Image 1 (tube, rainbow, N blue to C red):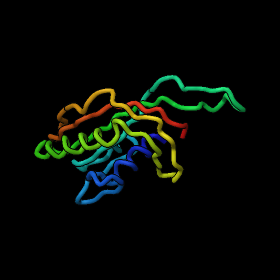
Image 2: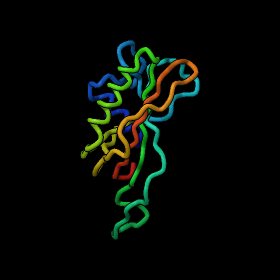
Image 3: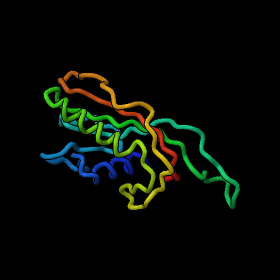
Image 4: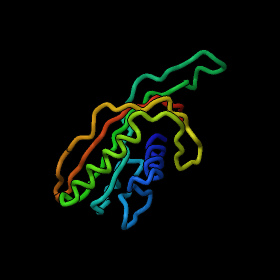
Length: 146
């Protein structure tokens, strides 16, 4: 799944993201934040609608050759740590916006990404009721089905 693949990649790049709760990194989820998440420093990958699949002639037209998928990366932390939020999301943006290669999700299966491109640069989204700042980045990817 796209969310797991992107989250796993970012956690492995030494940028400050972690797949598990730690005291030294921002935990990243491959899905939207859990509704009961109270930790200030969190990130998540939110897949959302993309483009039409790219099909090809072959033994089976049921499986698309590539998917056009879109996702948002959302990073939050307490407003006192806004510089860290901006740093994290900009590092993710720089590492992924021209990505070509394979990403591996929690299933352990590598999925080929033909390209990842930015739909917008990282941007401030909001302050929430707990004084946390939220920043978001939107991207599109052409990838194999996963």
